[in-house]
Length: 115
Image (cartoon, rainbow, N blue to C red):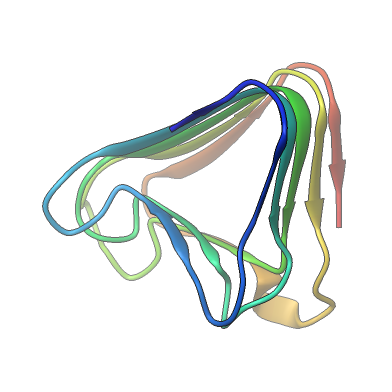
C-alpha cells in the first residue's frame, strides 16, 4: 500500500496487517494521514503472521492505537518500521501498545515518534 496524500481512517475493530500468514506486506507513506486510532487490540500489525512486513514513513502522519511487530512468530520473518520523516503516533496508554518481538526492528532517521 502506498499513501501519497489524503486520509485513510479505520473503523470498528479493523486491523491493518502488513505481512500476513501467506503473503508479505509493505506500507509506504509519502504524505497524507493513516488513522488507526480506533479498533481492537493493537490495530497496526507488522510481520505478525509469519512473513515479512515493512512500514516506511517518509512523510505524513501515521496514528495507531497500538503496534505489534513480529509478535508471537519466533523466527518467522522480518518486521521493520522505518521512520524517515513525518509523525508516527501511538495513542493508547496501556503497557503493551508498542510490542516488538524476535526479528522486529524500528529504524529512526528523521521525523517524530510519539507515544
